[in-house]
Amino acid sequence: MNMELSRRQFLAGSGAGLAGTTIAALGFGDVESAHAVSIRPFKLAQTKEARSTCPYCAVSCGMVIFSAQSKSAPGKMEIVHIEGDADHPVNRGTLCPKGSAALDYIRSETRVKYPMYRKPGANKFERVSWDFAMERIAKLMKDDRDQNFIEKNNDGTTVNRWTTMAFLSGSSCTNETGWLTWKVARGLGLLQLENQARI
Image (cartoon, rainbow, N blue to C red; front, side, top):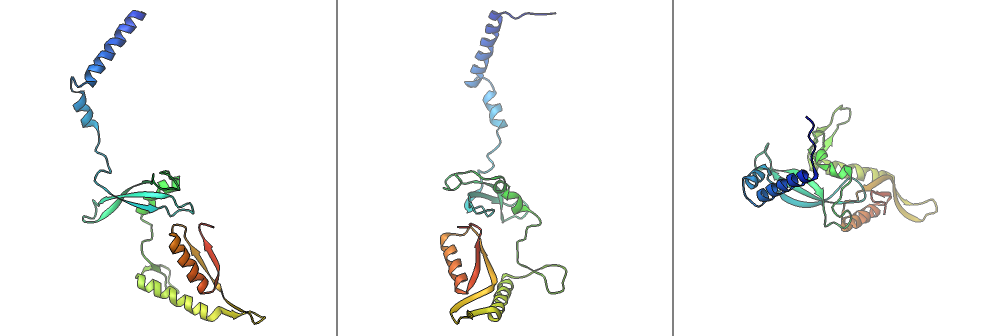
């Protein structure tokens, strides 16, 4: 059966539909309660927020990191969400794909969280304390500097150079940390000083 819809019938049907949805939207009927039930609670409502800097590249975009009580470890907080910081002058709330995926590398099972040390001749790394790691680094640096420090060049000019060691700094540091890093490295006589920011 082929039924044709006239313009008058179309307008009458449309008007009835509009009237019905308007009445429901004004609170007549169970539309409001059904709508309220369907809304999920905002997932960040019970979280704590902290601001940080993305560690991926030299742009140093601002991040807002949200943490909540851990379900797997009661009494501890865990990061549940990361987004761009809308108040940050660099990125104004945006993040690149790598920055947007920061939550994945924070939760990664292969992420290194502690100092690891592989003894000479060993085939695997073992966890060590921060004190051990810092003392070992300091000792190796001092031994290398004592052995390779150049006080004067061939012409007898004082140069105070340490050419066998290099230093890499990150762009996520503050200006004060960058200044201090530069002063310490130059004070030790390092010539090969590189920074992720390249500025």
